[in-house]
Amino acid sequence: MIKRFDLAKVAVAAVTLLALQGCVSQPVSQGLTDDGQATEIIFPDIQKDATLKEGTFVNRTNLRQIAPDMTKNQVHNLLGVPHFREGMGESVREWDYIFNFRNAADSAYSTCQYKVLFDKDLKTRNFYWLPASCAAALNSPVN
Image (tube, rainbow, N blue to C red):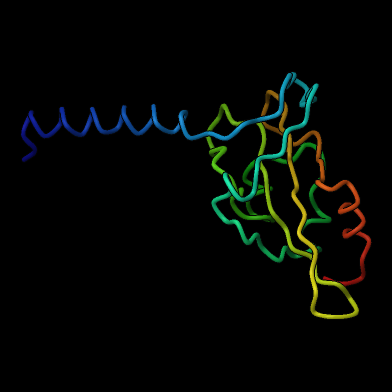
């Protein structure tokens, strides 16, 4: 049987965790509208803010499937969890990733940042690359 005192401690801990989740969120793009547009796109700093600084070697076939009107679950299924501390909750409207792309000719690779913006209904709307030239990786025959 759980004591009344223990329930109070659990409740305080839960509230604290929820409050802290908001405190650790990273900078997000400015002026995000209901339709998933932003007046200023902001990419978080990899070295300071990433939870997975080395990024991942994303499956390009999965990345090519990302499109408007997808849910967070669908994006998560294809790309995994975001690589920064934006969170996964209902109020989070952008996810950031760090992807590595191998060059076809050798074992060298390029690192790119990828941002997904969601609309007010949490459906994907806009996608951005840093640098913008990374979008060309989707056209590569390499998986």
